[in-house]
Length: 577
Image 1 (cartoon, rainbow, N blue to C red):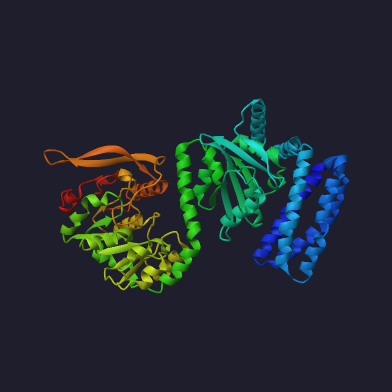
Image 2 (cartoon, rainbow, N blue to C red):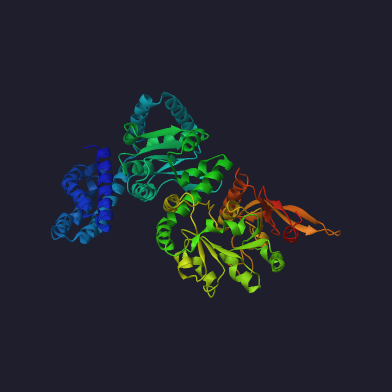
């Protein structure tokens, strides 16, 4: 047996060992036993092959060391099969995890230390031969990149070995070196990646970022019926992948395709079709050179991660929330249509003008986000509606002592279940777009769905637009850390932490001149990716064709939201617009 075969056999044994352990943990004993059968059938031959290669790995003077290692694992098969025979699968998994896996890792390190185990030339020759049959143009580009890389004394990307015997890839940017895959076991990391992004509802995936390909392989392996198109902008990364591993799974598949896409125009075209689930390999975003593209990708990643993180919670909330609604928010159209609405958010500028709401005209509706509800009531301000959207329990404390309030509540169908369940006032449910259960319910009951935008303020904006308000003014809508503050007094966490490296965006403050006219002073303000994402969503929403509502920013400072006219709150309340 060649050293490369033994090396790869070791990797296979590790992969199957870890798969058995994970299957046992989720009580998939059928899969665990099938893999265990393969493992035991291979292990004896593996030990025999290892013994034959011992001198090449350890040298003639290292016989005792090698025999000691083999002796240490000698009783493993007997112990693990005994556990399997009595149906103690937990012990079986523990023995594999605590005895076999460390043994295999140790042998892999010994092999790596004894000789050149990179096999880069073999891998390259194999991959370039198969690539030529598929894509001659990409072959020429990659071969040219190889010539440049061989002359480069300081390459950006470097292949590095891991304990498991698989390779990882590191890159470098202005922030320093970073890794595309785990330094411990890239295959296990890739399996976790695939578990997170695979769903039976999708049959086609568009993956941004190839790296060394592990995550793409495992995503495709989840379902033989799915297609996976991989978009990579770096020829260097593709070249490194072809050096690191034999990519048989890629070249010999009719449902997995690697696409060189320097400026992501091909990816944009695929996503425009709307028939592919978009998956971002986050480390691959770091070598996206176009900052505008990178920013959009980052915003998508944040939004997508938030949805995935809360999906189970959203489903659980929805199941409870549909039991407690007074009606749907659509039923309030007569209350909103033709009226002026002020949406009160919790930004730090709120303290500068919130008391003006004490003198609001009768034609003005106050819609308070849940964070400011207590503050407004404490000031004696007559709130018309409180709106809630957060799926978690973290903001539930804002309602402490207010559960018996009779002010109507507007709640997202996936908002935390306690809001509608425990509130004594009327509760009007908002069925949102892009959530399958609410869209199905809306279709069955013939009611509207609403855009969410990711925050309670964006939900409030869409509700007021769709219900026909003639004018909307925001206050407390800083969407920035104005004066290094996060929120208004008495709402949520007041002081913003760690904003030295926060991104800067166009902002404003305004003041009154000696003749009593207000003046807007443009500036820059620190903000977060989330705030910036909400701002971008609002800018797009208020410019859509269905919007007949005038939208104003009556906050006294914060980031500039394009499309919203900046106006003093007292002028807006007085109708001087």
